[in-house]
Length: 291
Ligand code: SF4
Image (cartoon, rainbow, N blue to C red; front, side):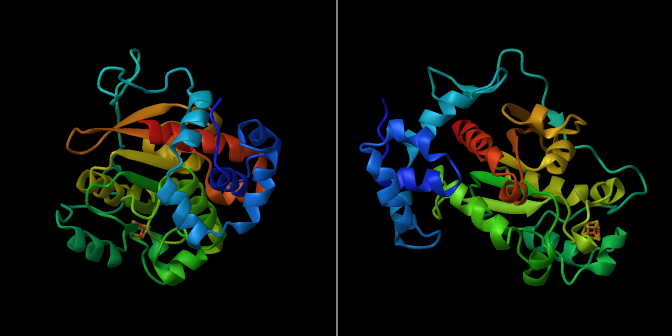
């Protein structure tokens, strides 16, 4: 049986894994409780966890999570491959004619960001303090993490995933071995905050879609993690609910034809109130990591 270090156990506890589930994998049962209080999201333990690497834990749980239809590594090359009966890669649906941003978009990253900052293609521009284009690595992007819409804090700071939901997401990623050194880009389906944190309307998502589409084509991420039912449905052009979409690998065809694996999971904001989903979110994260 795989043995987990106290630091690994502490991270898994921090993201909500049940202590009783972890105990069989502890070197000593008391390691679980001994390690937990020492962990801080930003502290030296976090960096140590990253430095030690958490692959054994991830592999252990990824093995439990592989759902029917999920991509599995090619035993010969170790590379991810789509399942034999994988559906064709989905294209990110285009905005209907006359809706949202139109005309050619810039091919330069900064120019695209400037273009979005000046966008008035949907009514959300009237309620924003600033656009939230996204943040993180733009070279050799390993993970592209796509949420739904900026919140109030994101709107104020101009950065996605601020606040407690972002802290939880960071803790989960670090627990899965996605540390500060990993090239990750964070963004949302739409770039302006809907007032009152309401759910974005279909026409707003459609209007903003070309920007996300261009971001994906320019970044060419190795994998995409879609957070929340809205991001999952919009990215995959599916109307199925999140429970049907998560737990498997989907394939998205970018503007340039590149096939990108997509895993859908819960939005960290929903995990804050529905902690029972954290174990499934952890499995999804490890599934994404395995492709
Ligand atoms: Fe433009 Fe997107 Fe903001 Fe709407 S949400 S105004 S399409 S940047």
